[in-house]
Length: 326
Image (cartoon, rainbow, N blue to C red):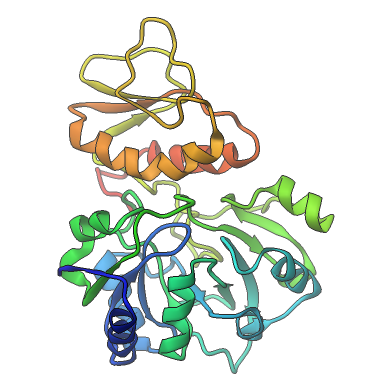
């Protein structure tokens, strides 16, 4: 499928394609998403088939505005508070599903919840508005593999499955959205992301809890995507907190590289954690093309946005069942 530059006509064509049950890859501020209309059971099923995604792994529905997003589930005070501070933006809220929700049950992976967000990316919101319905849009890559941060990554991984690929340039954030469970008027962090716990506490006063059961073992539907133990994985093995470079290994540094080590790539030579997050998936794609054996990552601070980076890397490095990545 050819990559199509963004234009008014391209967006209208993409909206028509979605309305007819097609799959459209498009940019958001986080990563590129593979989109289908959220209420269309057949189109949602096509997403799972195209990505080879486990059907217990739910999808996030994207809306053009906060009012419609919050109305897709049972709104809580905490959900409204978070939405008022961080939407549009890279924040997904988990709400209890109600009988009039416009989201396919398949997108909820059989659970009693819905995952909703309003993207910051103007192109994404325009496309949703033109389509007239919320759009489910998991990352546009084979399930479990490296997330796409530009249109070329989409074409390499899922090009044959897309009816259209819209090219909006590289993604600004480079990490999938922060996910917070707002059911029962609580705030539980299910997936760290670009909006950090520190930012949420500073702007809202909320202190995020962590789930008692993080899931990801495949025995029950998940409340949120991004909870599988093995995820975001390259073909090469991943070694974390590396201070040395082994034979036939690609080394990705962060900030100052350890003495005696030659880095093949650096997430941020200045040690800027936001720059590192934006570069993570793009460099992982490049490193995977070069790696003969494994990819080593220098230590990343375990605070702020570093928590989200380490979350993605730990899942990329997780053991894989018989070489299969979910």
